[in-house]
Picture 1 (cartoon, chains in turn purple, cyan):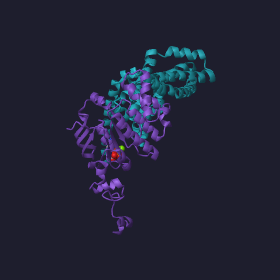
Picture 2 (cartoon, chains in turn brown, purple):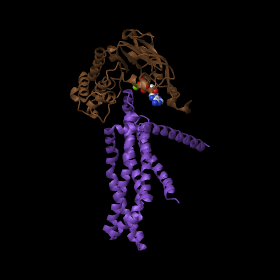
Picture 3 (cartoon, chains in turn green, purple):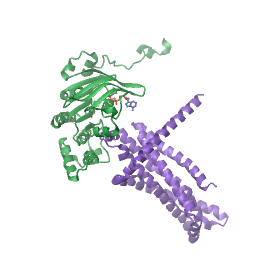
Picture 4 (cartoon, protein in one colour):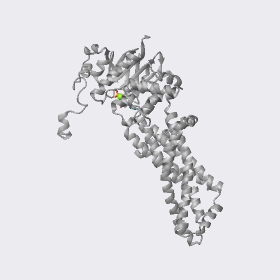
Length: 269
Length: 258
Ligand SMILES: Nc1ncnc2c1ncn2[C@@H]1O[C@H](COP(=O)(O)OP(=O)(O)O)[C@@H](O)[C@H]1O
Ligand SMILES: [Mg+2]
């Protein structure tokens, strides 16, 4: 095992009931890097993050985070480990009964006994880092989608974690917000010495800010490497995905009976 | 045959659900002492579960009490026994209508809200986010709500009975001319504190546990989708109604059966 790897997935298999979602995934995430896991919707990217966070357990294979076997950790140790992981959910997942300030203060209040003045300073620092110090009194329902994600980001870094996971941070955002979030991810990673894992299918955005990319589909890693490596990937599937071609190894048509036969009806044959 | 298979599948499913619900209840009970410590959270929930239900309880109790007064009078007057109106109204409310109707109204007003609230926290990944922040959602989200429901129900049922008795007074004494002194003195003489009032309180405590348990479990167990939550909300109201009515029969048979 390489001590430079913060997260290691080895031969991870996971099924929801009878449905195999991940079928032998190997991923290594280097400390200090920004790594993106790409794949079409429904391939199990969110599932992968939940496995890393210990919310799900693989049926087989290893999930190692910072030297600890996540699926084997007892609850208390798992919770200790999670305090060192931040996660930004797809929807932001802000607590809608708390305002922006209290959302960011939440992990601090739950896990530290800091005096109120210190909590205030820390929250304002985190909010300042995402540019929303002025929005501290707003309720989540008053935020735009992009602002909500930035508050979620501030909350995720409240406890100064060693790593942070982003679940589709760009999906459904306007171009300016996408630019802001891209910059924040890279900047926070480097300034705070984090390790970042992004799950996304926005090829151009993640290529610009990631050190390494993984492409997964149908439960397997198809290819991985630097963005430049993947540009030259021999896999037709990866090429189709990266360039967004409508047809290729992934057919445009959902499996269906023969078109002419379908139109003419069963009686015609 | 097909029917038999489906019946079997249905009962297996129900048993499995009951099992999961029981484990869930144990896990919540385990965290109740923690919920007592989080006093501000508990207060907030007492407000939204209890205080916000007061209005519907008062309005319903007043009208139920007045109807009891009118109907009771019509029957009693045939036997020249209208002086017993206070006793009839009070016993109906304290023994049966107070606890049962309060539980049904509670399911509609507070129970459904609890289910929807917890279910939506799942849909919007707030529960997951909490887990990822190493905060136990059973302690932080479910336990205070459960405790608030359990504490509120007996108080709401007592309020229902008190307001209902007053409604009976308005109808019987105010409208129909029953003697006011008789209304109260008959009630005082014939309603037994242990036999009637305490049994009613026991009922409302039991209903409080069951109604709140169903509400928080349905919310926590709902599939994290929009239709999952809307179905769970409906189920809370329907299942609570069934459970409360069935339990009421059992409890009544035990308490007043001999
Ligand atoms: N609790 C669950 N039960 C059954 N299937 C699930 C569950 N959660 C997710 N799935 C299925 O697993 C697959 C992967 O889901 P997910 O990890 O959310 O994909 P992605 O994030 O890549 O879009 C999806 O097809 C989804 O339908
Ligand atoms: Mg997803």
